[in-house]
Image 1 (cartoon, rainbow, N blue to C red):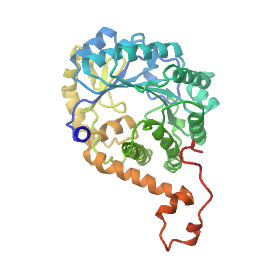
Image 2 (image 1 turned 135 degrees about the vertical axis):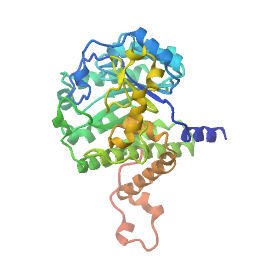
Image 3 (image 1 turned 120 degrees about the vertical axis):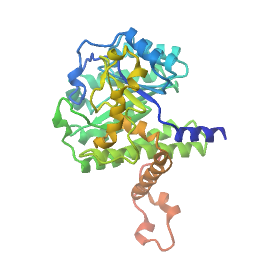
Image 4 (image 1 turned 90 degrees about the horizontal axis):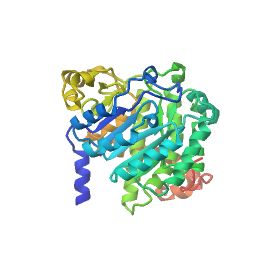
Amino acid sequence: MARLLKFANGVFRPLQLESVFLFVTSTCNSLCRTCFYWEELNSNRDLTFEQLESISATAPQFHKLWISGGEPFLRKELAEIIELFYRNNRVRHVNLPTNGLLPQKVESVIDQVLLRCPELTIDLNFSLDGLANTHDAIRGVPNNFEKTLATMDFAAEKWRGVRRLRRNVVTCITGENYAELVELARTIAAETHSDGHYFEVIRGEPMDAALKRLTTAELKVLHRRLIPFHEHYARKLFAHLGQPARSLATAYYLGVVKFHFDLHEQNFEGPQAWPMACTAGSTTVVIDHDGHFRACEMRGKLGRLQEFDFDLGAALGSAQMRQEIAAIPEANCWCTHSCWIYTSRKFSPRVMLFHIPWAYLKHRWSALAGMSASELAPFLVSDAPASLQAGAPNQPAAHSVPR
């Protein structure tokens, strides 16, 4: 009964601040051609720790802190900033991206946060945008790929068995790396100890607009080829659960992945309404490195927290934010941004109860064509075509790394 009530509370929730996206620094040691924040980088206008203390002290409680930048691990007080929001605002989940070029700083920050924030779950996300040559060319750093893999290997050994720390890879899909992403996914799954591998479509106004030369048809094909890797990670993620919880969790996880992929495909070449309202501004706020605040990373700046004496509560209730929230439904700015899809769908009971399970069923139905004869046998009927009864060449075992 307690688990049922917890699930119900998660599905039926009032609109309230759930996520803060905090750009902790504009300083970066990469020159990523995919970056939508490139015009702001290395501007030397970062908020001070004292200003961030004021922001945290005046903010309501919220669940998830999304760290961004620049390269977050170049921020001197990164561990202290995370602890600040953990203690003041009851943050219990932090999303922490990195290019993996600073292994000693990664070690120091993660060790401090794990020690000081005992109830915090951390998603440490390493960026890899292709195999070696492609990744290095996109990121503008020689040997970046090998250096990041080395940091990932170090992290896997250092924090092996620490369930509160998930070590993931995040890849930005572009026209330049499209052809090698299945091979990249296979390499990561087979040769690293990553807990997940997530794929985002290039968005916004990147430094190199040519990277957006990709079609929806190509994206659909790629997504179908990537789903088996998500099945691989789902088995790892929920291996500690007993049945039937493991099967239910796996099904829901894959439903969420398929739901996100569907929205990416529908909105890549033009906006198409989501099946839920976008909750930007109501459940999310973006704080830029210099104090500007926004409802969404893809929308304009609304003001500066300096104008509100760094009182985030006042900024959230400001006329600028109220007008922005009112404008979003008519803005037709539906997008592929998974962070906002993720947050918005959590506040839609219809999506949580119907669309995500339906996405999983669609995934399972499309997967039938690739199943072996032995796997299909329970579904066969007496008048099934003889060709189907005869079966097809065996597929890889369910527990193997996807190919």
